[in-house]
Structure formats: C-alpha cells, structure tokens
Length: 256
Image (tube, rainbow, N blue to C red; front, top):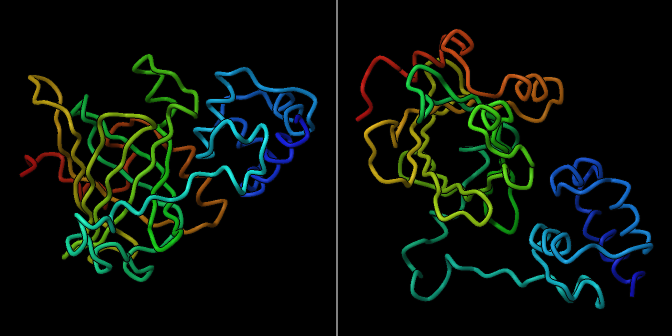
C-alpha cells in the first residue's frame, strides 16, 4: 500500500518542475515528503487532506492508481443553465490579446491609501481555459500579522474575455470572498501594458476601499526579469513604482 501511495505522489509531482518548490507550497518538509514518495511512511490525516486538496484528488491515492482517483473536471461554465450566456467567445481568451507568462501588477492598497501593492502572477492556459495564479507578498502578510505559508497565501482565478478587454475572478483557497479584475490594453506607453481596476467582495466600511485602479505589465518568462520583479513585490510607497505606472494609476484622482 505504501508503494502505491509513493508511486501516486511521484506521478502527481511529475507535473511540477521542482519538488522543493512544491514542498514549500504544500508546507511539508522536503525530507519527509521524500519518505512519502519512497513508500517509507504515510502522512498524518491532516497532511493527507492537504495533499489531496492541493492535487485535486482524494484519499483513494493510498490504494488506487492516481489515474483512477483524480476528480473529473466539472465544466460549470457549459452547464445547461448557463449555456448561451458564457459562450466560447467569452471563455476563449486569445494569446494575442492576453499572452501567457508572468505579469507584474500594481494597484493602490485597499487598506492604506498612501501605499501601493506590487505583485506577480502567472497566466497559463489549459483545457481551453485561461488561468491566473499568484501568491500574496510575504512582506504584506507579515505587516498584517497573517501566515506566510504558501498553501494559504496562494490565490487562483479564471480569466475571461470582455468586450473591451479581459476580466478575472480571483480567490484564495476555500475562501468565501474574491476579487474582480477588469483590464484593457494600454498602448500609449508600451504594448505589454494593461490598465483597469480591481474590486473586492466586502461590505462597505468607514475605512479602506473596495475598488482601485490596476496596472498589469507582461514580463514573459525570462527568469532574470521575473526574479527581479518577484523581489520587488510587497506594499510599497509611490517612489517604488515606475513613472508610467503612476500615470495610469492616477492616485490623486477618485476612482469612478
């Protein structure tokens, strides 16, 4: 039984380029994870649940080949009740409009109106859909006293076509709140820029905001450029943003 589980983990990990980074995302010690893969030990129930949730499978991976246990995809958008409302023109986002790869984004902080959030996301395509994936900057999480565990700081979303650009619905794992992003190509500065706004699904409060202008910059996949952008993520002052970001974000003007 341990051998089956170990083989299943190896098969699941084959989809990822680095087991070390995968372990960091899972919040599992690499040495212990190697013991699982070699069939030397089983994870605790809570760790097994974390693994199953991450890989979209269930506890049958202890006994059955993973090809038989992974959840079948549910094509919610093509459900008969929604048919004709979310058609292929909405679902299909062409790479020419919104290329795959890494993007750096910036927006005004929802909590501190004098600071800005700089982040990094990956846009990738699978099964005819366009997906977004990213992590909350660790420095921002530390400032708020939140866990920096990658398992909880990760967010994902789906990107869809709109009349004047694209939109993305983004949420954290098992979260009951999300953000809505709308972006349209901006060509006055560079052809790799998108401008728009982000909103969050929270009730109106006396302090903080629920909407802010947003800028996306396509970085591609060049490691040096992506790593540089990753090191610059966090909650920053206006002096850390490129001038053309500030021009598009227009922090001195109210958002309408």
